[in-house]
Image (cartoon, rainbow, N blue to C red; front, side):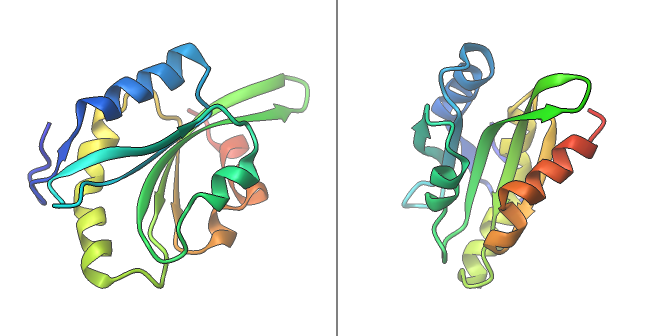
Length: 142
């Protein structure tokens, strides 16, 4: 699948790892990046760790990434819930060209991953902090 605005493709592995996370529940998060030649979105890392702080620590302070996180939380009166969150990480300190390429390539990945219930944009760590994401997912009506 190719994104028309940037020409960047989504690798098959991106879809396979997402299906594993969605169906297998063994993976808690996936971090995606661009291939070295900027032609394809690829899987950089997957983890079975449910530690949200460990996940956030994987996001580089000056480089863009996409991420999927299987966010588990308690909702009063409803018990445990899960929401699959799509996170676009575009820190203020990343290069303009990289930000533009990630922004123009996002839709190809977003459309390829069916079953996302929340979308989070992060330009600094406060925007992807646990409490911020918790507030957003518990409000969303997907």
